[in-house]
Structures are given as C-alpha cells and as structure tokens.
Image (cartoon, rainbow, N blue to C red; front, side, top):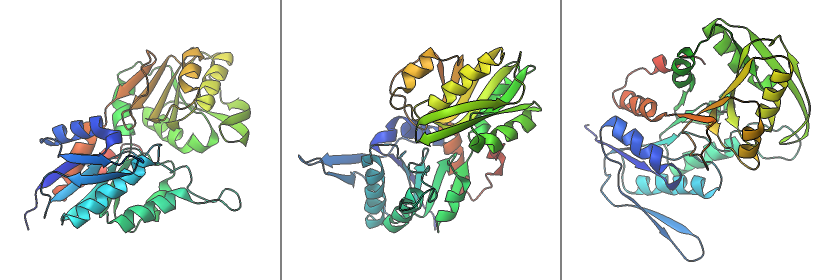
Length: 311
C-alpha cells in the first residue's frame, strides 16, 4: 500500500511544525480551529487525509488546551480515515508526574499516555522525557529522541579544554555523567533539598569546580530556581564561568528575571517550547531538522539509532 505523508501542527507548535514540514520537503497541512463563545473549540482538517500517514506536531505545555487540542486532532484524523496517526510531541507535558511520590496523587504521565492511546494514536515521537520509564506507559511505539545530538555539536564548537559537566540536582546525574564521558571531562553534582515544589531549602556542590568552565545540563528549566542557584554556587566555589543546557525552556513565573540576575553566561535550549520573551543570555537550537529526519526514517522503515548520541 502506498500512503502519502501529511504534517499538521497544533496551535502551540505552529512555528516548529512549519519548519519540520519544510525540513521534510512539504508545506504544513491546512487545519482549522473553530472556537465557541464559551471557549470550547473544534478541530477540522481542510484537506483529505484518507489513507495518509498523518503526523501531528504539538507540544503539550500548559494550558491544558494544548493537550486537548492534540487529542481532538488525533480523533478527527482517525474519523477522517487516516492510515496511520503519529503524535510528534517535542515537549511531553505532565512528564514530571511519572510516579506516586506521595499518597493520593495521580500519575499524570500515565494518564496522558492512556488518553493518547484512547484517542487513536499509532505512534509517538518526543524528546528528552523527564523519566525514561514513561515509554513503558504506552502500548504503541515511542520514538524517544535525545537533544544530545543537537547540543553536542554546539558544545564541541566551544573550547572544551577547561570544561566540567555538572548536574543541577542528583536526578540529573545520569545525564550529566553521559555528557562527561562523551567529552572526556570531569563531573560535579549539586545536591538540593526541598520542602515544597519549586522552592529549594538548601544546596551543596559535590566536586571541584575551581577555575573550571562549568556546563550545567538538565532536561527542563521551569522557574529557573534550581539552575540559577546552582550557577551562583558554582561561581562562589571558584568556577571561571557557567553555561547551562536545558532541552525544554518552560521558563515560568520569575524564570526570566532570575536568569538575568544569575551568574549563567549562556543558557542553551531547544525550540520544543516557544520562548515567551527574548533574552540575550538564551541561545535556541532548532530540533526541526531532527524531527523531519526521524519522520523520514519512520516512513521508510529505517533505523534511528544514529540520533541516540547520548542516552
């Protein structure tokens, strides 16, 4: 069976969606969003998708309308007789809710996986999940891509002779250690304690950063409290400079203000989430060509192992 490919984007990811489509070699498909006066909205495809591979690009950061829009896009595609439906989710929202960390809480990531499957998705493509085990929440294939294939060429273009990799918390140790091994540099770790979410009680540094160019790495930067505190502490410990790499630039609340006041020389992020405002400290690297290449590989049943530079 010969099926053509069509790529559509939700309202939260129109920019990256258009660049993914361009990288694949076609225009973004025509999608209409109708909104009722009470805020309810409806999705409709303005072209035939019968028998097509349909790729739906949508990050699911807040508000939850972004997730609901993706679910409606999937349902509409299924009812329009699409051959295969693939959700391309550069940022997978609710991924921080991957387990019961205390009694009587939901496992939000599992719920989202169930909703996507119930809506009719055949495959999911995403990048740097907050927890690797989320792949196991799905009963459909998940292409879990890593931003390392984008970050590493940029890092290697810098002078890495004096670099030390660092994790802003113990949860990011595995990721930072993988970068350190690949670059053949040392590793430092920040140990933090919290009483409530988004509020740090205290933090200490494990490792010698004196005279080093520190490169902090994490998957998400939200309020920037952890990252900026870690950066300032690195400088207090004698670091020469501090850069940070974070895949998903959530940047909520006081994040931009904290970033501007911090010791971070440069924050390197991807475009999985569009920036709310510009900053001279932020360097954005595009994931569009990577997703376009993976879409091409998926359609042609080719391996995508080459994109897993650091896992």
